[in-house]
Length: 210
Image (cartoon, rainbow, N blue to C red; front, side):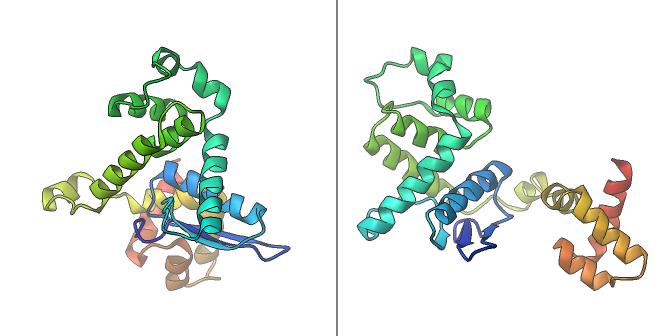
């Protein structure tokens, strides 16, 4: 689950490993990938979330803050952020931001509101207290139980489409070709694609349509 782990990295050379929780939203996966890459560049392995928990040892806390800042800076360049109308019009001494303002900036840069607020904090456009309070509020919202069956139906995931989007057309095509040429069993295909066997045909249909 995303609330349990977002990703991890293994620094081993010459081929370090980065893993990202595929249940994250696409923007979250990108941020986590960059966060874990920062850990690898710091020559350390890590099992990470984005919580900047001050109860952690100071060195660990410093590295998590640094990796968050690096990932956020890569996705939201300083000059571009400070040039946004919402930012230039916002009083520099006012540390609080409305949710709709953060949402608008997040859409502009295709990132989460958490990343935007992290960048605003780094650039001195919000306070650490407001950042921490907002982070706690968002985390509480994520941990609340979801709606009932109607809500689940409304937001049901399209797993075959996610397979193609996550793994890429070339890799997906390679696996399907191996199956069609009898070099791989259906159970192997299911395992490599991370989807149930009955969903493999839907993946094939998506590949043929596009």
